Amino acid sequence: MRAVTLAAPDRLEVRDDHPEPECGPDDVLVAVWGVGVCGSDLAVVSGRRAVPALPWVIGHEAVGDVVAVGAAVTDRYVGQRIVVEPNFPCLRCESCRAGLTAGCAHRRSLGINEPGVLAERIVVPARFTWPVDADLDPCDALCVEPLAVALSAVDRVGVEPGQRCLVIGAGAQGQLVSLAVRARGGIPVVTDINTERAKLAVELGAEQFARNDERFAVVVETSGAPSTLAEAVSRTAHGGSIALIGQSETPSSVRTFDVVQRRLTLHGCLIYDHPHGFAATLELLRAGDVRPGRLLRRRFPLGDSAAAFRTAAVSPGKSWISIAEGAR
Image (cartoon, rainbow, N blue to C red; front, top):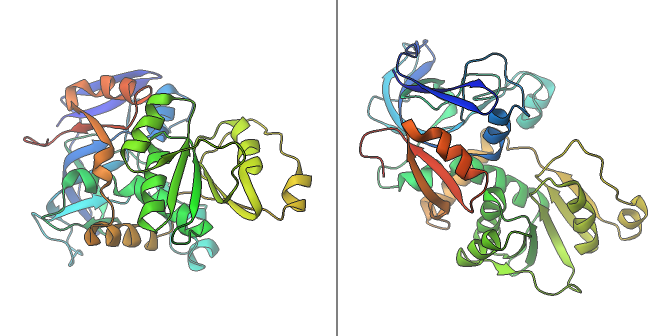
């Protein structure tokens, strides 16, 4: 079958002879419809994020159709459209038992320490596949995983109806945070040094940050740039909360004096917890409260996956790769 592998940093290859995956008793075999391109994928491709071996199948955001089920699987069926939850917590450790599965020390992640989804067919544990309604736009379904990240952060920090929330960074994750803020009744106000990204955020329903004297009860930092943590602190109102999605290993200069004196709360927001993150996100989609597929701006066939990744690194919105025949 065809698959896209990372052969070396910044070198992707389309293989026509990649081995077919084997479906275990608790798994489903999925014919992949499409794959979204995410910032963490870019880190893998560039070599900034290590993978166990090369060549390596990349990607973790996938929608597809079940084509076979394992012998022990009773709640999935052939022909069912599903979205993949790509993070597999052990469900046994202390964090998992507390419901904090994002912190599982044994978590396996597709495209990171498990082979990824950028292939014609993949095998996934059935419990980490989520059925989606046949009438749900597959482009919306393709955004479920990154939207779950955004919604988890927004729900953790708390957004009140009518509340103005500052979103720092208008990359794909920042755009999805803005959609999540709107879905929870808030008013997203976006700032980004990239004017095209900021323009897209406004097109999708956000306001553009304009008043330097405005302070916000809720700030969500999505860029991960070291300097933006200080910006987030300076833009947060007394008693406010900051959600940190973006991350960096570079130290950031923030005075604890400002955090303490203004009684700020900082929330580190790592992906989402299973099963609540995906369940809440799919509930939003079923209710029609959010249409994240509008963020998908550029489609590439499997053979042009390298171009998809190059474009995703520099262009507003999300790039995606169509795999199934007729995927639009």
